[in-house]
Image (cartoon, rainbow, N blue to C red):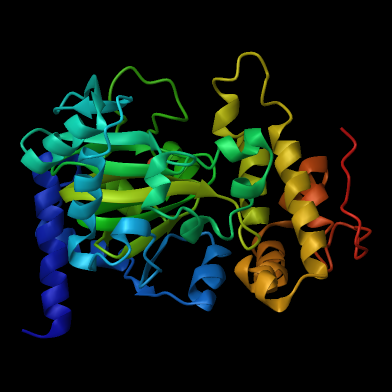
Amino acid sequence: MSEFARSKESLWRALQDAARFDETVGIDAQHFERMLKRHITPCPFSEANLFGRMLLGEPYILTGFPSPLQGSLHDVSDDEAGSAVMEWLGRNGSDDRHRLYVGPTGVRRDLTLEEIAVKWEADRTRFGVTDLHIKHTNVEDVIDTDTLSAFNILAHASAMAFEQEMFSLVISSRGQVTDSHSDAPDSSNYCFTGQKLWLAWDTYEGMRHGLQDVDRMPLAGKAHFDMETWLSLKSARWLLVNPGETLFLPAHLTHKVITLKRYVGIGGFFIALPNCLRVMEHWVSRVPLWSKRDVDGERDGLLGDIAEEISSKIVALRGATKRERRRWGYDYLEEAAQHFIKSRRPAKLRQLWSDPRFRCVAETIDVPWPCGSQRSTSNEPVLMSH
Ligand SMILES: [Fe+2]
C-alpha cells in the first residue's frame, strides 16, 4: 500500500472511530472523497509557516513546534511526554479542585489533580478537563507557557486582557466529545499525547444553514450538527491532532472535538501581529464572547484596551532589534494588512474603519488603506478617543 493510501486509510478509520462516540459525525463511504477535500494536513514548524499561515484565517497544524516541557521534565522523550506530565500532576499534592464533565451526558464533578491523574490512567470513564489554568501556578515549573505565548500580545497586556489568554492543561479520555462551540480569540493547542479529531466551520455560515453553536445561541440541549450540512459549507475543515503537533485555530470557526486516544495537551488563546486585524474585525463585527456574561459591563472597555496594546506594540517594535521583531512576527504585519484589505469588500472596510478600536490598530500599520487614513509612522502609539 502506498503512503498516500495508508494515510487515507487511517483518516477513514479515525472518522469511523469518531462516529462510535458521536453518531452525528458518521458518513457513508461515498462521501469520503468530499471529506478529503476539507482535510488539513500538518506542515513543519518554521517562522514562515507559523506567521504566514496565521494571517490567512484558516486552521493549520505544525509539526516540530518546540516542546514546552522544562525543569524536571525537560529531558523526557516525546513518546513519554503525556504520561510524564500526568505522573507529575498526580504527585503535585495540590488540594485545588478542577471542573470535569464526566460520562456521555457530561455530569459535572470537581476533582483534585491526583484524582484526575488516576482517572486518566484508568481510561474507563469519558471525561474532559478544560479549566486547569496553569499560568502563575507551580505547573509552570515543568511547562514553559512562553513557548506558545512568545508572540501573544494578551500574555503581556493589562490584567484584564491577560485573563483572556487562559493558558490551560487540556486533559480528556477516549470518547470525550466537546460540543460545537467557539472561543473568543484564536487558539493554540499543543498535544503531548493522544489524538483528537476536530471539525471546524465558520460560525455564521454554519448558522445560516442550521448548524448551531452553544456559545453563540441560547440552547437547552446539544447543538444541532449534521455531516451533510457541514460538507456543504465553504468554510468546513477537519483535521487530526497527534503527539508533538500544534493546532492553530482562528476565532471565527466553531468547532466540535472528539478525543480518539486519551489526550494531554496545553492550549491557550492569543492575538498576535499577523492575526490582529482579523481578530479585531471578528470582535467588532460579532461582539467578543467575554461580553456575553458581563452583566456589570466590567469588560466594556477591554476591546479598546487590547487595541491600544496592539498599537503600542507595533510602535515599540519599529525601533526594536531584528531578533525581537522576529519573535513577534512583525515582518508579517504588512503582508497581513495587505491580505486583509484585498479579501474584504470596500463596504466592510468602511464599516470597520468607522470603529475607533479597529482604526486604532489599522492606522498604526504602514500600508495604504482604501478608507482615507492618516497613517501614523511616528513612534507615538495611536490613542483612541473613548
Ligand atoms: Fe474551543
